[in-house]
Image (tube, rainbow, N blue to C red; front, side, top):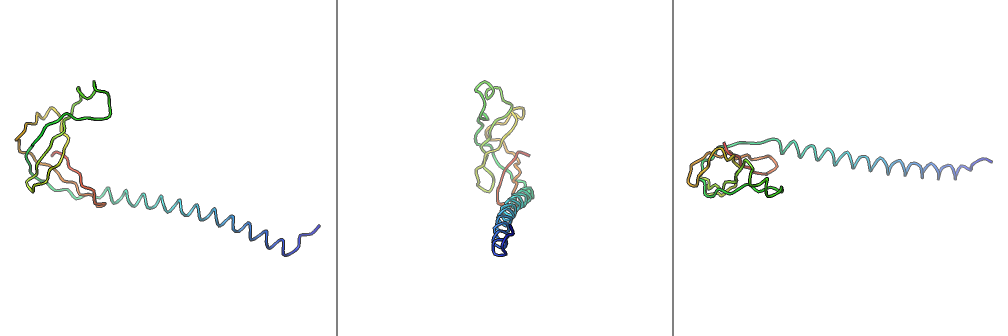
Length: 121
């Protein structure tokens, strides 16, 4: 029993539609992966500047761990007022023995995605 030309054409069109749907999904997935990689590359590009400041607060570093680990942790959170008037929070080791009123240098990391982070020099 031979397939009519009209039936063959309809079947080929249905198969082509299914292939194009799958190709479209694959292209969308690849586009999302490409955008993610581009965003990560932008976030890895950083401009660093040194900013002086004064320690305003010294607080224990709190992380989502048990209370026993927090008490024994090696870090503290410093509230720092920078010379340009901005207030930021920076992590520091307890071994640095930071005191309120100490003058410190902080590094401002301006990521190309617009994110700004700070670290202790």
